[in-house]
Image (cartoon, rainbow, N blue to C red; front, side, top):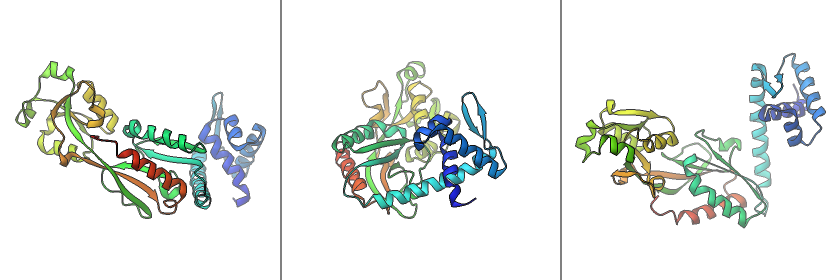
Length: 292
């Protein structure tokens, strides 16, 4: 394979990402026949089938997935290079990619919307996922992360806020099991806990609640919150999530249960006008996040 084959590899990458020839053609700005020709030529050159064709579209084969992993990395590195070159411009415009946990969406989405209103030339991509996006590969301009301070090299890390947490129960649980009068009653109750207790409040639960009483475990924050709301047991929720709901506070927030929230940017993009403008906008908005 050579650099001249990049157009065909890029075409295959877009077909795999979108699943259809028509979708790839639209993104690449070419005719769908060109997409098919690129795929056929690439498969012939490699001597392997890269896609399974079916009525719903194209699905990568094992060989296709191997090639496309390389193509994705190359695409990301090209995008990162382009961002570095273009990021020195004097306008706040183009794509802004921000990533955070889904639980931050009620806070972050209005900030993104108001930033876009202020800068109409900005195209927002808000990625809410448990996956840790690679800023060094250009997967995002800004990451909003909770927990331990990120330590990846070449990233700029700044504190944003501290999220408060408290122990709650749903009315349905209280009606069925009653409520503890204090930690001395924890052995009589059921709890919702993290499968891997990384957060400080879940570590506290591990240390103060009998292991056999943590009867509902999950790996994602959203699932844990849903379990508490469904009455599966007592569990920790962010104060901002429980505020205004019918949940019953069992133990109020404590400083040792707080989770720090960090702003993370890559050193190569940190000083660009677009990133700095958004960071300043977000920090200003975060000043009003009282009691989160």
